[in-house]
Picture 1 (cartoon, helix red, strand yellow):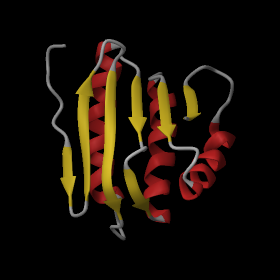
Picture 2 (cartoon, rainbow, N blue to C red):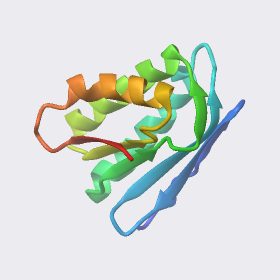
Picture 3 (tube, rainbow, N blue to C red):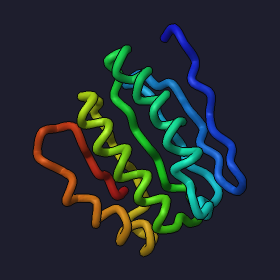
Picture 4 (cartoon, one colour):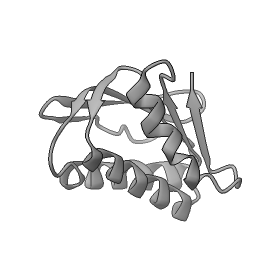
Length: 124
């Protein structure tokens, strides 16, 4: 990989960017409780997606260690799903299915799975 993508630190939320053999992995930690997270997440996601698309890399987001996120954050995640699909970037969202709020939040995102292989939701 030619360029290293920097992670994100915003208030109680941090997102670590890890290069894997399979692509890029964004590991969410802490809490996303900003009232307007799109102001920070939008430009961050745009840069990550630009890089992933240019390098033909799949993207995985891991939420297992995230303590909480608010409804404004899920809106930003939905925008990321739509933008990734537009750019042809394969996106995997991995979460802890044993944690009720994660299961409910991410299971609801299954409506965005069009069976095109560009979105995978994994609750393990």
